[in-house]
Image (tube, rainbow, N blue to C red; front, side, top):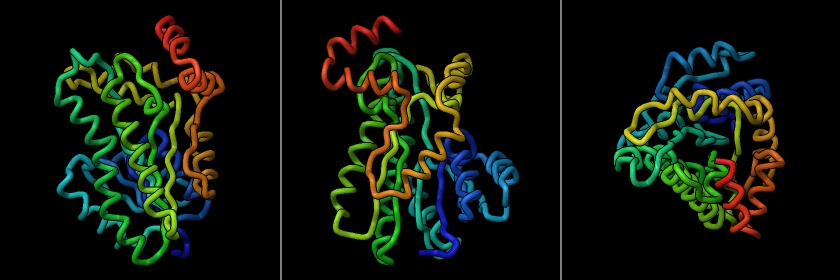
Length: 261
């Protein structure tokens, strides 16, 4: 264990990722903050209670060939990583018929293949020192299918099952594995998501202005990651009811979901 402890957070320039940077700095941790947008990362760091505890590591998480080197660089900044939170992701909206293959590939690459590639490079390092925790931010969208979110839901479902499989592979070791499935969080994620043709969906900018505030969501995630629990469903009572209906009364669930949409 490093002293002070160190967390690496991807997708750290906005939303849940930025809120987690603030939350961990407030706890006295050192933070490595990663996303493509260096200026946005620096703004997040400068807004923290102790900016000196934030190391900005800008990177393109879609560059699969570069990810092992990125993990190596993150590890070497302070000589180890206590906790890695793979939060980077992108939303998508469009039918299966209308969405282009490059859009589906983009969503699957960033939401699933990128964190999986990072974990493959990071896990041996943690195993060598017999210490570390790996967490991924998925979504409740990965727990059920719905219209216009096929690629997004598939990518998040893949991530959940990947993490669950990893949990079983390391259950006899000191390595901890966690996954978080948020419902609607006030991040504006849909305004930065992709439509059928791969354009940014700025017209859906209001869709992320409801739900759980990021500061509250990040505090719940921080508390959860200090435990040995595997899966946190970070959702409203209505969303939890929906998950219950989907599991036990799927026909009723989809009747209600179609009426809502």
